[in-house]
Length: 330
Length: 291
Image 1 (cartoon, rainbow over the protein chains, first blue to last red):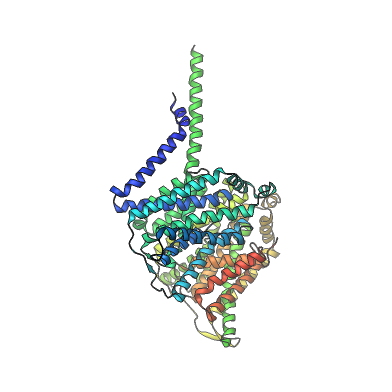
Image 2 (tube, rainbow over the protein chains, first blue to last red; image 1 turned 120 degrees about the vertical axis):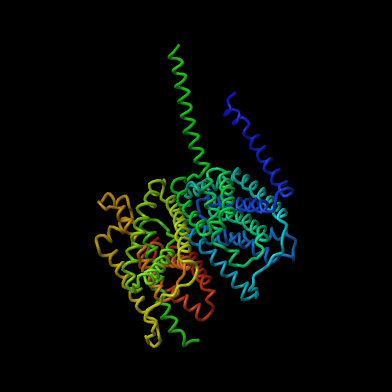
């Protein structure tokens, strides 16, 4: 039998098997792997959560959110303030809920406006919340030094991050398949038409934005102990708003696994090359962003799909040609 | 407290004229080319750092540096439009998609410019101020460089406004902003107009940058803050409205001086945001915006 036919028939089984293998690898890795790689995997998982939850909102509705760093930072600050007073799982939940409450407010103010105002507002919002947090932390609460977090076991952090990643991916998967997901996709396609179909577009957008922020906030809360020292200015780094976009676009937003691939590739490169290349890494980051948007608007997964189509066409033609020749010979 | 008020307002107006100039450039780039240039402040930073280099390496007065840095920035803007954004326009299916992608390309430029600059000039502060003597002006004392910068900013602002509203090329630019396809059919070379407008926007950021280096210490970090200011100002003045952004620039200048003088410099950005939030709720199109 044909290999391609086999692949399509047992696709679900293969995907399930692959996911189980990855999960087994990730859960057993802290038992034998060294700390450097455990931290690297945690970072990659965190990037996956950020990229997937960014793409879940901005990819489907077409509204470009630049507030990821704000929600992520809220999670980090939640851990910084609550560490030691509450159990860690509760802190993660609180971080996520605070971030989503913030997203709900931003969404109410901005999501009924044109997309460009939303982008402007969220872009500066990171700076706004960073300054406010810094002001409150330093001038009102007198934490001029910032917050030192106790050393956490890298393996435990990996498990928490893995749990969050699984929950995030499952929830987003189900949202995409629900009626609600369909409504959201129609907003991205043509908002006015969606409204005429009876979809409350503003509410749908606000809800999705709120849900996506839960994951970002929780990711920040889990990642905070890995930073060891936390300050408002570190927590609300604007860079964190752009990386999810690059990862999602680089991977390709058309498919569910696109942003995941982008996050794995970017997360690995970030950890291995950033300290070595310093400023050049950021310059290269910019160049790649420009090149990807210009020449790979559908990302790697999109590129693979087009290549497969083209190659498939070539192979089919070649086969047909071969058959035609056979016919001609007989 | 109150005796400081006139001084704060006057210096605020002078700061604001530079914000206004910067915002006019941004609003021109968005209004005509549909590119929300998130790297706009980086152009200002680049111009300021180039001015320092010209003074340091060649001994050129920062005052005369405008004549070199300005055209250079114009050329950079012109080339960016003719290469990157024109290619992007050909490759994107619809205007909203172009707008989103152009925004992301501008982010890319933001990283390229700011970190290449940091590689080159490092992170330290450079002082290149000139004409720091204070003169008495309307009952308060103001540095001479602030007055000169104010006069130049207003002159450039008025000149650009008159150019857009009274001349034939200006009319072509406005026609292209309104409806590029029809303007093209009427014989306007729209590609040229887009490139010229983008270059003009970069030139205005450049002039702003040179003038900033006369007055304040500069570093490779000043770009981002200026981008945020310019974005708040254009939203306040109405995205796409040239006179609106100049007026809004002066208002933001006064507000930021009042906040930092009477309250706390750390709270400037939060106050911008309070203004922006109220504005978006009450009148999303901005003070002088259409729609």
